[in-house]
Image (cartoon, rainbow over all chains, first blue to last red; front, side):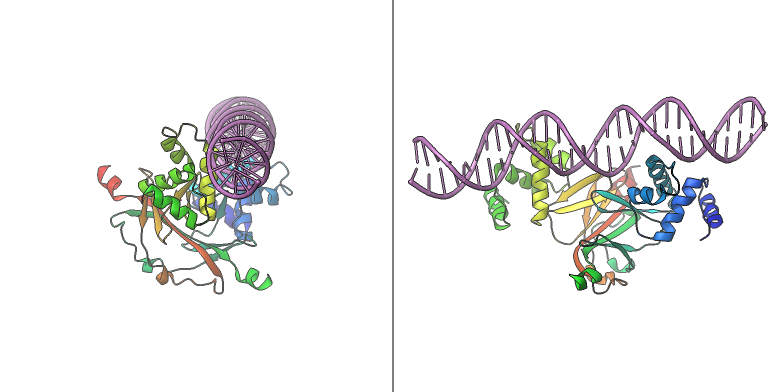
Length: 137
Length: 137
DNA sequence: TATAATTTTGTAACAATTTCAAATATGATA
DNA sequence: TATCATATTTGAAATTGTTACAAAATTATA
């Protein structure tokens, strides 16, 4: 996605495409690394020296409200963000810390006990050891 | 489970059953309300006036390390604990805030993309509106 | 331009959690 | 029982991640 397309995408979702917002969103879709606020801030402050961490907080919170990012709570001490809003799961490796996306069949979950509830958001998190870390250690 | 049984259960899991630890675990299995640290502390400090919140933090962290409780990260601003360590999902109602347990078929997830990974913990979280809140509002 | 509205920024405030050392309790040994 | 060693609890202080807020900067509108 090009810068102009990002601006357009933000506009279509009711977000004024300020320079900072465009750059934060650009970071998300170019890196796909499920970053924390701090990771986004550190990556961008070199190119945008006036950037404030508060802006990154505000921006990501706004994106979440407008549903163009998913909030990932896989670990209790860090909030991560994902610009891929399709239904998918997240795997976090306990060794290298990397977060992987994966697909799963939502329909076959066969959920019991909570019939008649309205589902708004589904999050599937798995923790363990990734293939790469299994081989190298 | 009786007090003596709780002490025994803690011992079997490599935890010395101090008075505070037994009472915290007793709270978890009697209430099954997926409490936060603060909820446990406020519930017990009346009966154990010398109780420190640090002790509740230490105790629940120890329980999690020994795998006799599950850490629930359904919301980014609160950590909850569950003494039911069987595989099950958690539903949080966005209106009343209550956390419900539910069963699901883990085998049918049909997970792709991350073959060859070792899974250690699976968490399925759903947010939405519970049946009770749907009817009353 | 001038004015209003919005966004960004940086500091301060806040809340949850951790660190740490002293106090207390427990267990083992003589 | 007395003594010593070990483990646990406690409370204050430090740390961390996040939010609140007001001033400054930017953008949009007339």
